[in-house]
Length: 192
Image (cartoon, helix red, strand yellow):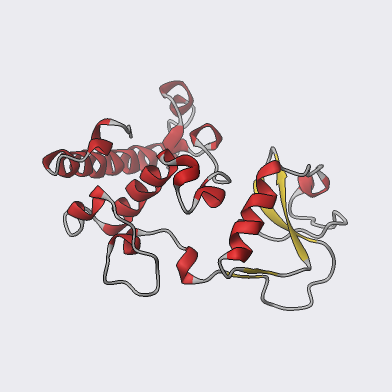
């Protein structure tokens, strides 16, 4: 979720703040899931959706509290969910457990998200995952094709993007290798 924007369109930092935010069918499911599992959302905000911003929060008027959202740990999705010893987060049975200690935690979390996304409505986090932006929404240089990268030549962004892509590629190759060694089917189902 991103920053709050006054409903009246008084946000001067983003000229699109008065852009129409249509109700989105996934919003109700997300809020219902969130509240059912202990999450709290201020009555002074609503979850909105627009083509430019995706899902985001908007203030419906002056905020009556500094606390806008409270998310309990049991709703979080991370590599901690692979540890059956964890008491604060739900433990899930996943072949990715075999990769703990062999793949960095942040990469393991990405893989767990992909695994849960593939489960669709069978995932306990389905309402949340369904609202995440997909690859088609990614607009940073890391997602640029060669033609777009060519426009960055001569800037500091081009070498930084190249270095970051190489780093991600190396991490990806390592993760795939570890998953294949552990005979985890996900290694054959996902791409960088």
